Amino acid sequence: MSAVLRLVGVEIAKVRSTRMWIGLLLGAVGLAALGAIATLAIAGTPDGLEAGLTPIETVEDVRDFVTTGSIAGVFALVLGATAMTTEHRHRTLSGTFLAAPKRWPVVVAKVIGYGVAGFAFGVVGGLIPLVAVAVKFAVGGEVVPFGASVVVAVLAVGAGAAFSAAMGAAAGAALRSQLIAIIGVLGWTLVVESLVGAILPATVKWFPFSGLATSLTQTGTDLLSPGAAGLVMVLYLAIALGAGLAVTMARDVE
Image 1 (cartoon, rainbow, N blue to C red):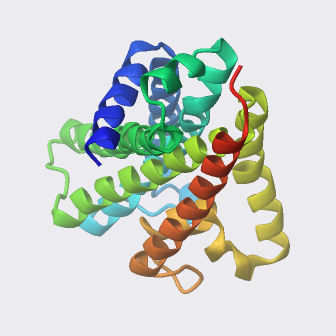
Image 2: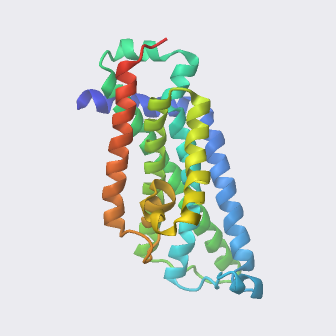
Image 3: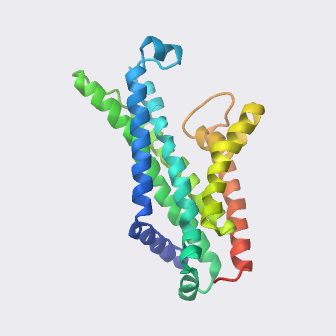
């Protein structure tokens, strides 16, 4: 266990030493900010009301608004997909395995380390809408409604992004190719889940990203409870990690 924890620290240091996380984080911040500003601009207007965007007036409204920062999870997913594939791409994995001859702790550490990075992405993503609505209230001379549920919502967005990043890392370990891994995870979450969900809405709650991760930040009769969603997410991650470990243990390293 100590070896895994040591490797987790190494993986987090690797993330910080590259520029990719900066670009992805900026993309997450930009898109979350754009969405927040656009939503605030039309919320409560006739067009906004027609689209179901009511004015933000209560703590519950702020809590729900914070969850729009969940878009950061998509960027965390891409970041996770580069965890192992970057080493294959630059042929540095052999050196990594020489430093840690047992392969499984390396894969587990990458999944955990990138999950931590994904959590940071999600927290930042959740804070962007909160900052935007706080500025709006401040301009009007008011104090933004705030409560413990808002903090929980920010942390829930972080948890969803952590899951996305960890799943991306596990998928990258199984797929090996960076291009295929990134296209694969994005294609799944943006295309497959959307299309199947449109055809079979009842299946959405079982999807890892549009269903389970959403269940952490939203409630509804069509979604699992946060607790049940969390258990299924652990199961999905275990399966993905098992696939990544099986492939990594079986393949030769260039």
